[in-house]
Image (cartoon, rainbow, N blue to C red):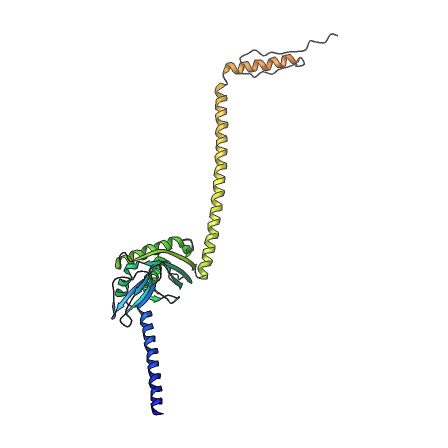
Length: 294
């Protein structure tokens, strides 16, 4: 009876050992291989030392308990900066400003970023991979946003969003290139929202209203100027016409016209008297009706 119990215990122990060995073999098998998604790269760490060579997309091999591989995005990453309250050039703070910065890290340089900037990367919301140097780019973006906003008056901030975004992108790229050449690419910057203080909003509305009034007055002034130009042109035309007429009224022409007028009176037949100007050189012609016979 004791021999049977001992044999049973031995058989059970042997079976458990086989199960443990199988589980260990499976853990080794699946721990050796891993995959990197397209557009991402892997960073290998062996005995706590980060390799400077990136692991390419696809299947990779590693030694369990000795080395590990973490996946990082080498694609475009969006970085949202919300509820910022920078001060404008006129020392007035914005109530709210939302900006999105899009950046990409060169895949072959990501292991170097992990070596140089420890703990600057974060895990993506999806959880499967990491966003390289996220915190570093965030700080640079925030500083540049505040610096660029400080160059623009709050009253015109809402009209210069595209220009502001361009300056933020250019200066971010310049700063990152100074510290890490050919590593980062700021692909674009979008100023999503600019909300000023209510008092500033009222000032903006007043400024817009005044601008519209100035534009209307400018149009009226231009119309009045055109009308004045027309009157001047007409007056010049009349003056020129009078000058031409005056130049053509010679002594002989005036005498001719006077003769024609006298002839017209004479031909009417019922004219008794014609008064001729005293300074005319012709003899006055007086037509009288013959006396009636008694």
